[in-house]
Image (cartoon, rainbow, N blue to C red; front, side, top):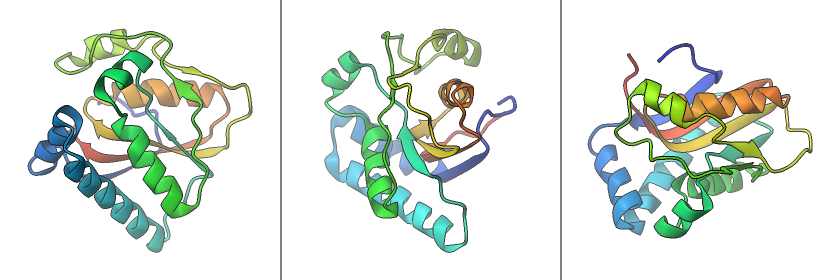
Length: 173
């Protein structure tokens, strides 16, 4: 990955077994037990980060799904993860990010295709000022293209420090 647009990365694991299996079960087979397990794992790693003196954000945001895709899937994994972490940390959960257009799924696309696919993919639903320090939650970070696109949008709207919190991350090259 080229220089990331986020400042810190907090992840439970690399995107490999068993997390790869559990994430796929949750997202594509609606295995709620796998979702509960992953949510607990992210909450635990965030609690450990906090106990070790990690700087907490002012608010939590999450990677949005297009309305049609979320209706089809029935849930947004990033939103569920963010809700749990915000509740645990007693921080506001901001629901200001959205996808105005439905893009092609990112799965199977190269880095360049993902970047092209994400042009104008996200917008802010509010003109309210954003906090200076936020955590952006996603379930999986593969190439970092989605996270970087969202971070660039957030920085254009005044966010100074962005932590990316995720269940799993692929090894970057």
